[in-house]
Length: 147
Image 1 (cartoon, one colour):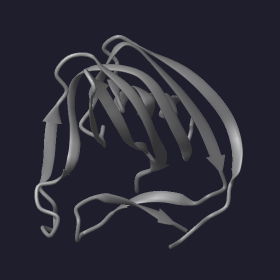
Image 2 (cartoon, one colour):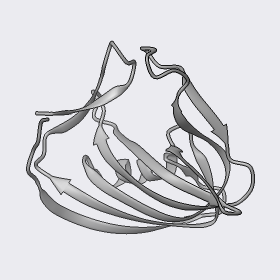
Image 3 (cartoon, rainbow, N blue to C red):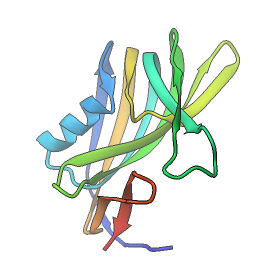
Image 4 (cartoon, one colour):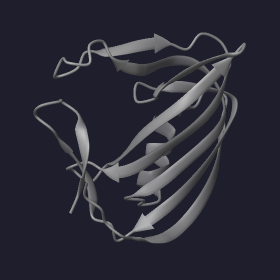
């Protein structure tokens, strides 16, 4: 395990609107506000897109992602972390539980899902951590590195 201590900076509350694409709209906001590292908490609804629900095979590296489509309006509860990539661009890694009709799908929203009616997001900026997302040759992911 590696760790870094930071301090809370600015706190933002966002209201996503119908059709906004997660994580695109949050990353755009982070760029506009010069947010490098932050915690993201979200609730609301999603209505389309797809989520990563795991690798097809756990022992396969690099992994072949399993994608599940989001068909129809779902409730959303998610949490994530913004950290810059090697070029300094903020990248959101967010996992969420999506519920509909008593069934839940949990996964990574990286491919993007669209907001259904409303999404509420809290962004808590974290200053002084030195966190960055760098390419990992083995997995093909951009993994969080603590400096």
